Image 1 (spheres, rainbow, N blue to C red):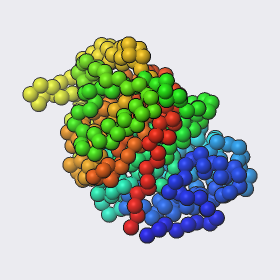
Image 2: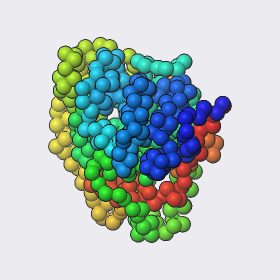
Image 3: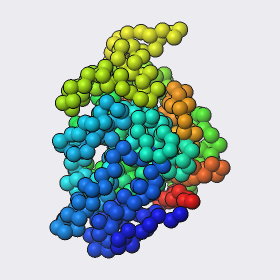
Image 4: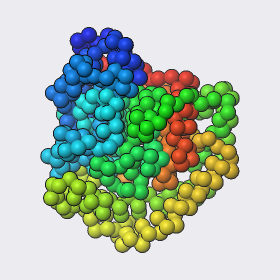
Length: 484
């Protein structure tokens, strides 16, 4: 069934980008009210995806009407509808972080990253659902739903996961409800859902964006991240948040890109075939591709990842709860956690400050955390630095996720699936370096989205985005999901 057209919206939402929407508004081809009504209509027609915790129909239409009456059309996102993940504070809207204890918390101020988008003219239509407290990759959250079943659903197949933890933002973009929005990323949370829903994203270098006003896991690893229809749109969002200039496409012939053997493990047949074809297209455009090794990558990453996230989660959440003014303790927060996987993590590891030890024992997390911060993480960062410089690489390329989206059910949140889906995204997260996710294909058999990630040296965000914009000409945009 085709979705209803709204007002004077003459633009094709199935192909619309943030840039095109802003250009259309600037030229008077469409109104913000028409774009916003269409986005809201599509959101309601896709209620079964469980995309939204809060859909702000009244507030979004009021903002769109005000923009049409007197808005500044020179602003880069003037009048364009976007969405925000529900662990990022938006003034006047609940900020639940996907968990029941915070469902009534309404911040008075925008997080700085949201304030940047609003100042650029964006219309926020709602807060998107997520893996509870951002602790997972499936998006299977039993705390909130608008559809018949739990879990944010994949834009291309509602029986599949949307990925996490920025599940709703990824599904909203993939389903063509909006062309862009914000997520957050600790170990893969803007890249995994972008890959599984066929959209683009950036995990910026740690510290590139302010992290205030965002419910945390780990101050060492957390960052907000833009997600959008295209890499050009991701670059637009980054330019707004980071106060940068426009980015021109990179010269593909000058690029040196590495592939790492260990990052090609555990691939399903669709992903392996799509990645091989993508590398072939890159070689055909005279990009230099080097096969490289990164010894100790998995070992060092394992010494950093969970020890840092699980240890910092306690103190960082205690500080955030104090910021909210809700008088919630971390114990009270944990008591109301709905999703069993997250409940087990909080009750078994975060609250007691423990980590898994040998023979199914639990051991004190502090010494392991100290070793991770003082020894393993610097060694991991040095490994990346030496790999980039020693091979004169612009980036390292790999499949963003080793598999296409799996079935959405409680089992999708297993520890095994968690480790599998962050296999390639987690190491760069722990090193604090930037990474972009680019859609490259629908699987030959599954017809589900497959993504390619490029990680670059710390601080190379703009160069990575320039590469991503250039590579889009090779891969094109994925077709929209089929609708019944």
